[in-house]
Image (cartoon, rainbow, N blue to C red):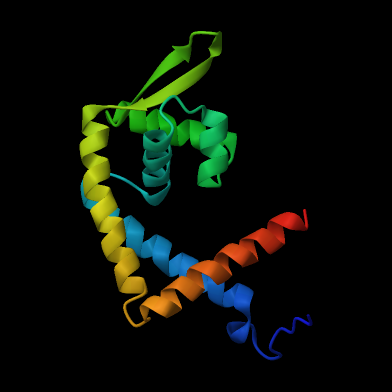
Length: 149
């Protein structure tokens, strides 16, 4: 199958449009999460910890699309603010495992609703079928780029 990119200015190109949406989504999420005391990357970390209690910093960094150094700062701030606790791995003392505190669980429940509201606003003019198509197409685009590495 032939793939063509529309000619013309960058604002008609898929990569530019995707980045524009991602930037707007990040700004809206950061604004909406601020009253809870979270940033978008911190929210990503908390959701990953909820899904995989004991997750390592290295895995968290991959899940949140940040460097290990950036993840260290994020985790340090989340621990300082009482959202998470870290403890040494029983089989390898240098590895720290991360879990949610009660405060982290409560904040995450609030944050989930905030993020749902932001995502709902983003897709409000799309039909259910269009949303399903969008999800499918974005997933396939990600797979295409991952398979070429």
